[in-house]
Image (cartoon, rainbow, N blue to C red; front, side):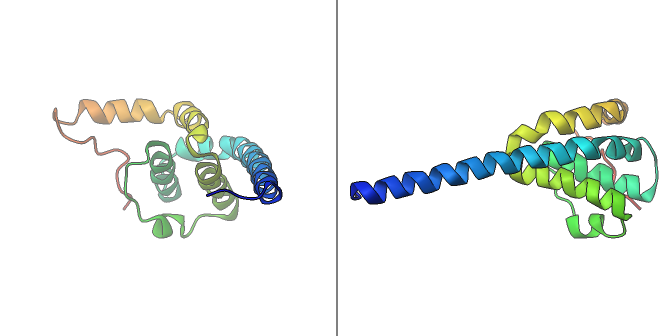
Amino acid sequence: MSFPASEEQAVLEDFSVKLRLGRQRSAAVASQLDAAAPLLIEVLQNDTHQSNQVRQIIWSLYNCSDRIALGDLCSGLDLNLAGAVAAAISGRLFMSADVEPILKEILTTAGEFKRFAAAEKQTPEGMRVPYPCAYE
């Protein structure tokens, strides 16, 4: 299928605008996540109901493999924490795989990989490591 030159130029210009806006949005989202990281780290270093909710969300965003009840996990978070979690979710949505180094740094700084390693040592070989545990 071929377009007239003017239509082709319009399509290319539209694509260029969308690409530029996407990059700007990704940069803004990355900045919001960077600002939210200290709160997320602080919360992950605790063992509370909210920290367990956030732990499941951040791990799920990082590894893309766990099925979580996102609506349930997002319910009841205080407003500051909800904003921080929203920044992490927006990061995954708008930055795709580019968000993974930021999430990894949050998990590392919070000590999550050490806690995962401890759970892994207690898990029989060949079994899925039950971490993060579902909250009660």
